[in-house]
Length: 82
Image (cartoon, rainbow, N blue to C red):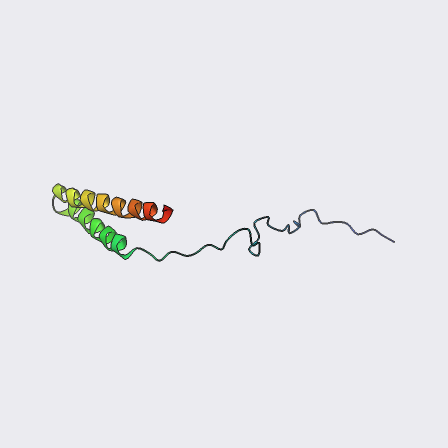
């Protein structure tokens, strides 16, 4: 009998230690997109376009919206830790 040659290129499938069926690890929950942050981000993009096309002072509006978004997102993290 001729022994079969093993194909070294084929990788064996190893079971992931963080298996989906493992009760130790909870399933990830998909978060809904924050509508307020999304709308403010779109407005900030409009301000950036106006900055390059109309007048450079429109950048102030984009900066203010950026700070509002940052406070909104950081505030959400603080609430979830409590």
